[in-house]
Length: 287
Image (cartoon, rainbow, N blue to C red):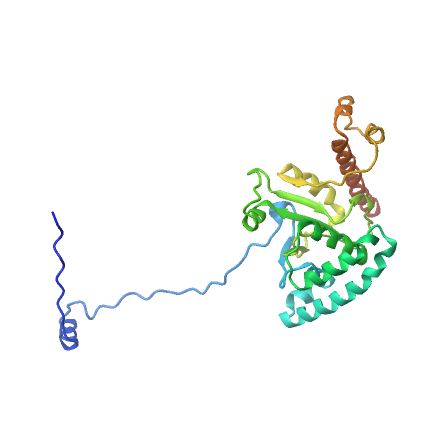
């Protein structure tokens, strides 16, 4: 059975007006619709990862140099127009490249030329590899006496690097700008995206200083599916066992573990020991 072909009839504009005038519903009006203007918002609170009172400030423009410009004065950076931010980044880039000569007497003295070039590459918006980001953050941490805890979201990585797949239970990775066991209490600590797209800023009155709870935060976030890349301690297996065996968590069967696992365990223990001392010192000072 075939569907009959529809027949259309052409009518003039005058005929159309006549038909509308004879429409019995022509005097009815539709109820007005209230239009509510809404401002698009983006959820930036970091309460869901245990950073109570902290906000993820999206950097514009993005980049490690922009991140440093932001932490120098977060309020001014947030309120400044793009032109002012750009000028700040230009001046900071020049200053930092000049300061790379100060790396001659540090553990990064052989990488100072690379860090100099990476600063320029970051300013120019170049796409860096993971190891380049780590070298850049390590160098800038030394130059600016600042420490960074860097977050690599598994969701974000899957979006940007489709070929790199994460386990569904993995939230992401946590890496440090250098070995936390060497960090100093008087230096500021910042939590940021490892590609410098955002940085965590305390914006609420209930936000504690990171030094006071970073040990607890790292322990909790590790339990919640984040992989913390603890530093590895250099040494022979016998030396690692000797240092680990005095810890309350040590078991005699741990001697069978590989040197790499033992090195990471000791790196974690040393890092958490440093952070715990910060917290204990602050508590003692408050008494």
